[in-house]
Length: 193
Image 1 (cartoon, rainbow, N blue to C red):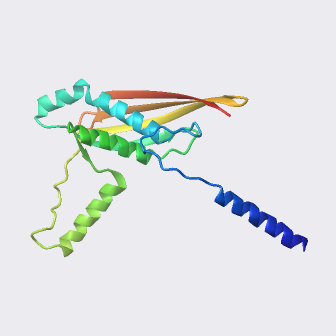
Image 2: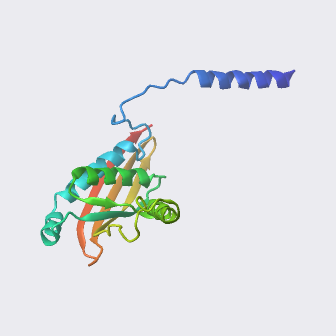
Image 3: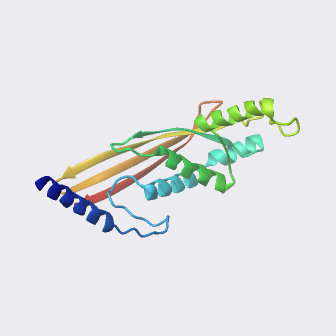
């Protein structure tokens, strides 16, 4: 009997928790910071500011004047050295979007996605018609690689903490290894419990 009462009690508590949740749709660009951790707003704002800075510097005009074409960029590894699990993939996609939408540079595929494209091209050699098969050795080679790191420092006392993020990005000429742009963005959040 007591066992049945305990099971019933937990079932009622679970049911009440499930029915008391309210979900409201909000604009995806709304700034909502519930935990104080890195979030979508940080990713979007940092990528916009840093890519706009990169595109406003002399390296791009120097390259266009010397080569008569817009530069091709590949985004390499963005390391997460923070105390959190951060999806650097969303940050990379935000940066790719900013670069491409500027119209000032071209972006080429990197990593696993590039390997998937090559696998598809290999399949086409056997299965696509001669008129539609995509040829080998037609990929654009990147002129520059963007790489970076996201770091954090947490300072906590009692019910308050300060979370500091520093994002460092560098753009390197792939032929000469010359660093042509260094970007840095800092974010500091005060979290009170």
